[in-house]
Image 1 (cartoon, one colour):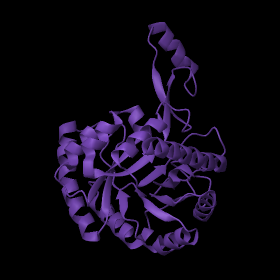
Image 2: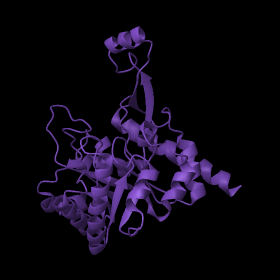
Image 3: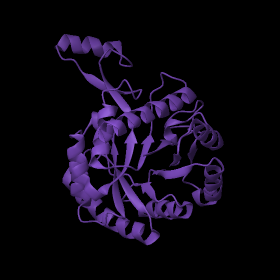
Image 4: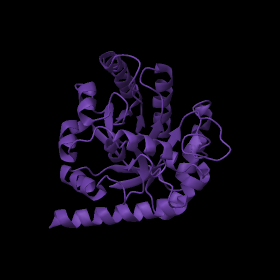
Length: 298
């Protein structure tokens, strides 16, 4: 396997810092976040992220993105795009940019739940993806659908229904351990088997469930829950080793399935400083990979 970092999770670093530090730590690649974002006084994962590239004017930045990546000796594990499948103009731009960079694959986001009837969202997204598949094939790249909570594709079952019979060389799926803890979890092996040739990429992060009143939840919520006799839970991002996702079992299932491609880490926990966090994540995953390899060799 090859390991990379999605730069949504490195908000404090400039692109040059992200590439240089990750390369020095031993990462194989980088997955650049590309989106227009809100400004922020303090860099954050979703606003003011210094390691993100704006979609506005992207074409003028492609040479710089390529140069920074190559100078660090990193590969592209893919592009972390945010263009939604029904925004054909931006999807076309992202596909073209991915081809120019030689990055092979780019995420195309799915409609969130809410508003329209799920069946209508699904039918519309299928029509959009038929167009996306044609355009991805024309550019010689692959459009990726992420299994993501609170979207129409929160599970492998939903994703395979959506993309079944589309060309798997043009459309694939990102399986995401952390997202599936929040919504959509299915047995790892069954999910990989369901996806078959559409299993294109893997994202790893971790999550824990926290009772109302614990962690970041407000004390008022705890009082309300106690009065009603109901405990309410919410998710929080957790370090890879301590969340509720079993990372080692995940890698064992990937290995049994024969997956030997990119694993991209997007750790949104904040217990450790960023540079320590990325270094420890790589050591942790490589140790798990080594144990998994020994187990299967035996």
